Image (cartoon, one colour):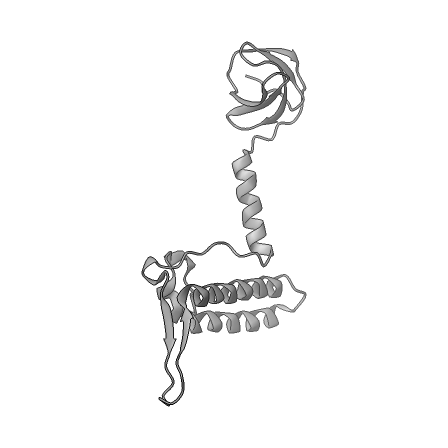
Length: 174
């Protein structure tokens, strides 16, 4: 079976006349005059009115969206949603000074956790900027070691993360 290229015109028994606007590995995305955008299987029954011979990229919208999300995560300071462990939701951190004449400070755990996640995200952005900079390799390695130590200093807060993949990881001992 030869794939139709984007711009091919077809006539479908159910949806009528339409133009192929995208092709994935399993479907044609067709904009029909009467029915709007529909996806139909590549092996569906339809009449080809005009076939456009073109290179067809069979990457799905989901794959494009996933790639875009990963690039944005890697190259921007936009943070992903990181869930806090359920046991901490709605909790409070209480800081008690040794001097009992001073008042304690209460901080919502959710707000504290958000700040930890923001620190982590900003460290990641700094790491990416260092790696893409024009610094010489030795300077990059030296700065990367500092970043690894920073992550190591923050591992105490891993208990707050719901998903282990979001944990801070410092240098690993052999």
